[in-house]
Amino acid sequence: MSNPRNALAQQLAEAVYQALSDDLERQDKVLLVVSGGSTPVAFFAALAQKPLPWARVQVTLADERWVDAQSQDSNARLVREHLLIGEAANAEFVTLTTSDETPEQGVDEIARRVEPLAWPASVVVLGMGGDGHTASLFPDSPELGLAMTTDEALVAVRTPSQPQPRITLSAARLHQARRHFLHITGDDKRAVLGSAMGGDDVRQLPIRAFLSCPLAIYWAP
Image 1 (cartoon, rainbow, N blue to C red):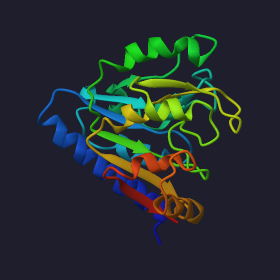
Image 2 (tube, one colour):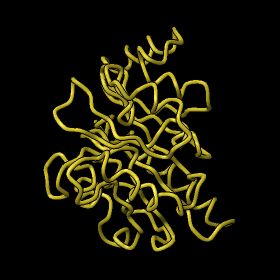
Image 3 (cartoon, rainbow, N blue to C red):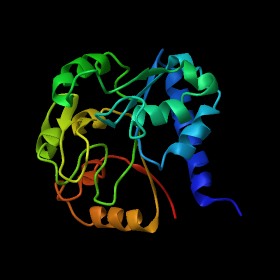
């Protein structure tokens, strides 16, 4: 019997491949925004196998922990090890950290890096935590209100539930995409998503900010 999470990863990779391929017929470069964590590893591996003209694909992250690029906690490291392999290594990867001490110090430089990319993104692949956060839009973050309302591309975030400071694309910037996919696994996250669909308080469950736009949900047990 096939593993449902691996099957899901293959289905999501096929959908993202088709979306990027379609947009590449109309434009020179396409932008893919991905999320970190453990859930997307199989999806990254599956997408890396797709026969895209990878040199025309730009990849960036929805959010990042403010850690060294070699840290086990680095989303950039995850992307480099599992997505940017083989032909996919030819993609243009735009990271969300600098050598600055804090994300507050680095945010302007990263904004300059992100601005010239091929917005609107072809695809934004979101994840979701058990607390309803997506990207680094955490319900307990003092910066949540700013991240939800600002027109700036990026926000430096500190949150009591997380050990490291972070940087995140703002909700407005994450909305600048032709397609949104939500990739989640497990019954607990399905229950959280169900709760999110049953209410509208974005501060309580930030994933709600993306339920009002077309959102393709990829879930497996």
